[in-house]
Length: 220
Image 1: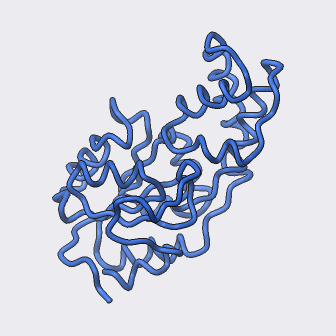
Image 2: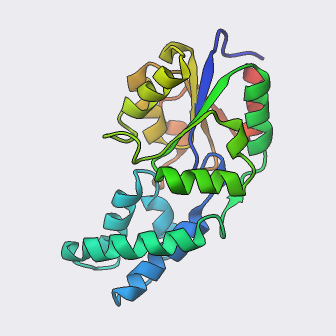
C-alpha cells in the first residue's frame, strides 16, 4: 500500500542501513587501541557507539577503553590508518539493500547517500558493494560543517538534488536520521536492523519502519 506520494528524491544512510559495517569498525578501532596499549572493545560496545561520525566514535571508544582524552589525536591518526586498510573487508550489504535502491530508482526518484562516515571511505565502500551507481551524490560527514542529527546535510542534499525537503524521503537506521529528517521537514522511514545506540529503533519518531529495504517499493 502506498504511503508516500509526490516524492521527488530519496536520501539514504549508509552504515546500518545499506551495509553492515560493524566488523570494519571493530577491527579498525581495536587496531588503533592496541597501538596505544589499550584493551580491545567487544563488538556489542562498538555497536552502541556507531552513528555520530568517526570523531565521536574514536573519542567514545577511547573513553570506553580507559584512555585519556589527551590520546585522542594519536588514536584518531591510528584509526584512520587502520580503517583505510580494512574498509569494506569485514562489511556486508544487507539483504534487500540493492533491491530497495533499485525500487527507489525505478520510481523515478533522484538518490543521494548522506552518511556521517567520511566521504572517501563512503564512496569506496559503496563501490565495493556494487551500490555506488545508484547514487547521483554521496555526502559524508566531512562534506558539511555539521553532521546528522543536524538537518544541514539533508537540506544541502535536497538543494543539490533539486528536490523539496517535504518531497524527499529519508531512509536511515537510527534516531539521528529521524531527528535530522524531522528538523529538515522530510518524511522518514527507519530500518529495524541497524545501529541505534542500543535503543529500540521503533521508539523513534518516524513515518514507518522496514525489516528489509526491499519492502520500500510497496510504499511508493
